[in-house]
Every structure is written in C-alpha cells, then in structure tokens.
Length: 226
Length: 227
Length: 59
Image (cartoon, rainbow over all chains, first blue to last red; front, side):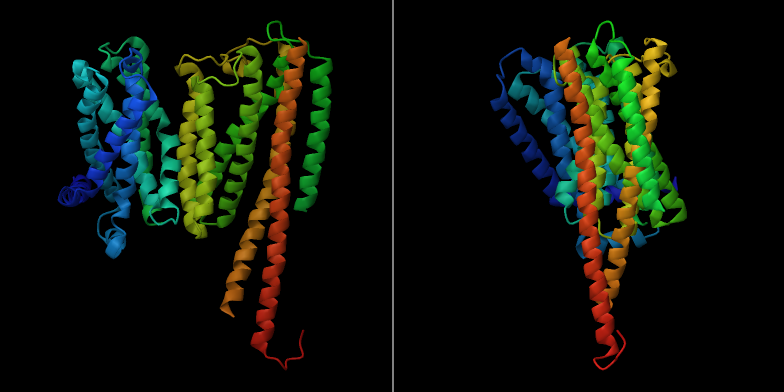
C-alpha cells in the first residue's frame, strides 16, 4: 500500500504540474494534429485504403506524440536540482519510476483520446464501432510505450544527446507493442470483432506490458541511483 | 599471451572454414527445390546462432558487472555485443540475398526478419548509448539495463517462428523439431558453427584488448590533468 | 541454376566483406588508441618531469 501511495503521490505531482503549465500536453496535441495533417498529403484520404491502414496511421501518431511527453518526464526535474531531491527523498526508485510512468500514461492516453475523434473526422473513419475493446487495446499499447519510454527517459536525462538518444532507443523497443496494437486496431476500427487469428496479439501486448513493467521497476534503482 | 591466443584462434578458424567451404561446395548436393543458393544456409544459420549466443552471453557478463562492480565484465560485455552485432548484420545480408532468389524480393516484412532487424537496431542503440555516456560506471549500468531488455526482445524473435504466420521457412533443423533436412546436409551447419564461434572469440579478444587500452588512456589522462 | 550459383557467390562475398570491414575498423581503432596512449604517456612523463623541477638530473 505504501508503494502505491508513494507512486501515486509522484504521479499526482506530475499531473498537477502539467495541468497548471499545460506545456507538454499542448505541444503533444499540436504535434499530433500536424502529423494527421501531413498524412493527408501522403495518400488519397477518400479511398478504401484508408480504412485498411487506419490502425497503422493512428499508432504512428500516438508513437510520435509519446516522444514529446516521455522526453519531458524526467527533463522537467533537472531545473533547481529537483532530480537530486527526488532521489534523496524517502521514496524508493521503483516508486518514483512507477509514479512517473502512471503520469505519462495518463497524459498520453488523454492525447490519444483527443486524437481518435479528430482522426475519425479527418479520414472519415468510424472508429467507435467497437470502442470498449479499442479502448482496452489503446490502454495496453499505451502502457507498453510508457513503461519503456519512462525508463529510457530516466536513462537519457543527463546525456548531452538526450533529444537524439531517447527516440533512437525507445522506438525499436516498442515495435512489438506497436505491431500488436496496429494489428488489433486495424480490425476494430473497421468494425470487425477480434478473431481467433488476432487473439495472439492480445497475449503479446499483455505479456510485453507485464514483462517490461517488472524489468523496468527492477532496473529503476540502477538507472536512477546506481 | 592474449595476442598468441587471438592469432591461434583466427588461423584455426580460417583453416576449418576453408575445409568446410570445400566440403560444402564439393560434397553436399544441391537442395531439390532451392538449388545452389541453399548453401548460403551454412553461413546464414551459424551467423545467426553466433549472434544470438553472443547477445545472451553479453547479458550474462553485464549482470556479472552488476554483481561484482568490476568494469572488466562491462568491457567484455560491450566487446561481445559489438562482435555479435557484426555477425547479426552478416545474417541479415546473407538472408536477404537468399530471399532475392527464393522469394524474388530483397526484403520481406515477415515476423522473423522484422524482429531480427529490431534486434540490430536495439544493439546499435546500445553502442550509441555507450558513446554518449562519459562516466564508466554509469555507462556500465545503462549498458546492463539495455542488454537485459534487448535479450527480452530477442526472446520474441526466437519464438516468432512459432507464434506468427511467417514467410520465413519453418524449423528445419532437427534440434527445433523440424527434421526437414537430410542428415548429411544438416551436419555442415553445426560444423561451420565451430569456426565462426572461434572467429567471434578472436574478435572479442581483440575488442576487449581495445577496451583495456581505452581504460589505460583514461587513467593516464586523469593523472596528466592532475599535474 | 547459374543465377543461383552467382547469387550464392554474391552472398558469401557480402558476408565476408562485412566481417572484413569490421576487422579493418578494429585495426584502425587499435592504431588510433595506441597513438593516443603514447601521446598521453608522453604528457604524463612531461608532467612528472616538470613537477620534479628543472634541475633534477633524473630522466
């Protein structure tokens, strides 16, 4: 219980800070809209093809949006030595990591839930046909991206090439998550139920989330403290 | 002593490889459906096995560093990772050339190939991260984390042939319950693995020696700056 | 069949080229490391000599 309480304290701190400043979420939302705009130049938005590739497009938008949110996650603590204060505080690194991950997850989910209707409008995609299942897929995929991104954000925060290193490290790791989420989203967006062929992707997402959450929490101490 | 070992390993590896190439070209018949291109398997599969083993052994050495807090384990882990990455690139290149003949394309985005390409990207990121971190202990810790997470991803690569529908051939080696190859044709895969492992070990020893030189340069530089 | 054999040769040449290029890069890296080591050793020697003093007869 102490673990959850401390982690939620960190998450609440980050979310409250973000709600007050709205820096990261505004930037992330704007960036998502720009990407949606750029996609409209890449292919014919009226064609049937859009329905087929909508899952992939959506998750590319989410992946790029996540880079801004995850990059700010630990970078915001650099000013006024807040990072040192957090590490020296009584909360243990795993709690700090988990709290940060929960905050990033909430922010990223908010951006994604904003992007979904905008995507539907711009590309004439009826994404809400199987919304509960789609929401589960979005949450599983988002958690997978968040967990990896938060860990690497902690790792790269003090590096001189932080802005380059974070996407370079994160994107190859989250590809299995993106793969599973895209395969599932593709069918759900066009109104098909999840068939037996696609059940494997749910298992991939759940397994990925579980394995990498445990590994990330185990390594939080090593990354943050040493 | 290390130099002698490197030279011995390299020479023996080259001799065994030369003998194996002779056997592969003169004694192993063409495969019924694939023809001569099938012989690339004798380098493609051992390279893949070498690189996979290398990544896992590097993870073990990284974890040894965490346990013992001795930077020599980190040096060994980094060396093994770099050499394994070279062998992974060999695997992709030979696989791509095989695919050009058999599938008609240089590349196909099936699960096994894509996952293998992801491994190469992950370990390229590992090497880039090492260059970006100046403090040796921090570099070693971050490398350990990346190595363990990378190996978890490799597990997905290994299992992908069973989990996903794929264009890549199913298991054919008898150790993977395939048994699709004639016994006389399967043996050279394992026989060729030995010289590739020896070559890999020789390169790792060279690379580790360079890491030791780097540490010596850093230590002397600190001494020089203290005057 | 000839095309098969040709591509087999391309494949083997490509594989060994990758290893060869890596070995060359290792050799170049070792050479530059040794040069750097010699340079830093000289810096340390010069530093030691200057800290001992100008009139010290020791080499």
